[in-house]
Length: 263
Image (tube, rainbow, N blue to C red; front, side, top):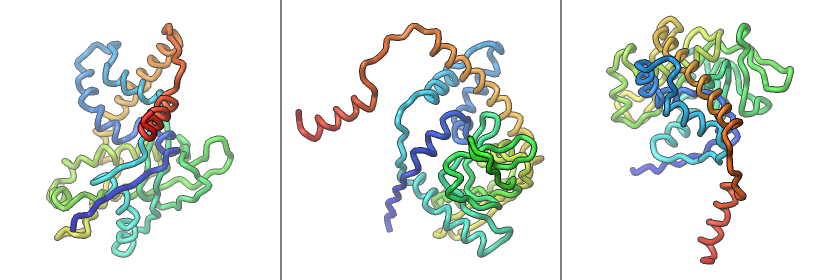
């Protein structure tokens, strides 16, 4: 059967991620980061500068996904439920929420505490206690100590992950981000889930000490991120700018109207 996967995420969640560095962005910036290590320390990175400029832009995020990306989102709650039927400890599925600490953001698939609607799309993790807080409110939630990361690949990639060693997995960077954001996290279970595969489920467990090298790299990347965010903000204040009369949304709305009416 030919499955057609489509999914829409929360626009508010996408906007909440714009001021932090996330795991997917870390992965995409890694080649540029390695290139900049060969440059003088005060050199500006075109890749990081343009990335931070895009972060600070007011564009409307694309909430839709299809194919493998949509498949992963749709299967995640089923994967967490099947984990709870097959193994322990029990996890609660989380979706469309980002937890932030020191400029880095983590969107968990599942934690040992429950996500509730009052949390909204953004939480802050306290640097010492690890407790989660809703921005602008006094209400706090218990510090997560366990997390599950779900990977719902299609059969070919899923089976490849089965024979990879714990040390060579691409998912290590993403798991390291979880440890950097949640200071009281004891371990992360990574679950690979593909119901149609010959081996439909398998997992590995990571502790903080397993990912010391990745955490060191991300810490250095975060420093580079903050440096370029500061520089972009300075340029935005000092650079002589001509102000556009139209917003991108106005132009897009007129474009759609002209397409519909032929005028």
